[in-house]
Length: 175
Length: 160
Image (tube, rainbow over all chains, first blue to last red; front, side):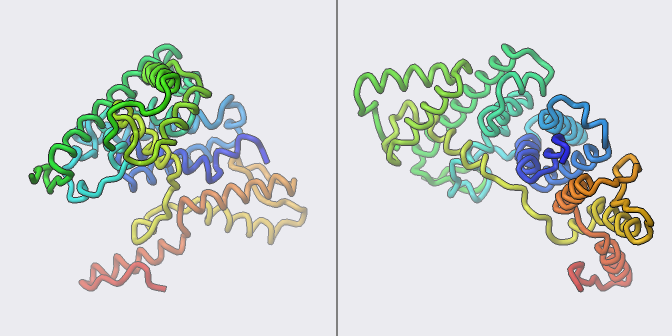
């Protein structure tokens, strides 16, 4: 099997899906994006052999596809992510839901860097390659993203504690 | 989560502080990040020092997100997906049936594949793509569904 064809494997597909979901904040749209990208990569045929890092290339393609989709939405920022505690499920939110929504509040580049580094385990050099920026810039974005996430979570934990863990629909706190 | 300070030895507390600062600065190496995660996740639930609670939430959230798999499509959305794999598989079957010499299929550039291993690799890829997409049969089902909707009575798109 040609080595670059591993990008069509299930683990890479799942990785592309997770990344798309983080960027788009929507499960179905993420699946559509991955499908589009997989089709495009497949149609590249033999030229895929010339790509130095096929997985990074696939992730870059996912990012481009997601950015196109985000642009086509009315609001480019905060796309698809509800404010924390605006849904009925807020009462039973888990760490993953809180983290996912907090990531959704970050600017796109921070979202990308935090996802690829802390969830997928890419190195900062690889992320720099995907984003087309320098590695020290990547570290700076990573640092900002982590600090912003921590701040959001501290704030939400404080809010949670102050209202005795009871947050109602539309973010209204029931004391 | 109610701890007010690190209830471990001073050295461990110092190490945790150092690792977390470097983690936040984005300058911690992979081994350091692993160590930091291990320390924070080793605290029993509710006993994470308050200043590190948010970090522990982050690590737990990241860990859970990293396990997520792409779900299978379902319902009528499934039927709208284009089936690259089914078309390709059908084409490969026709080729195999009519070919006098052992041509196992064609690559994406239209060149014949005469190497069995390459053909197998391609088949694996088609199978992989087929998990993202759905069979052409769905097109017929969709047509039936749309026709039935036009006639005022929507049939189930899942009929067989």
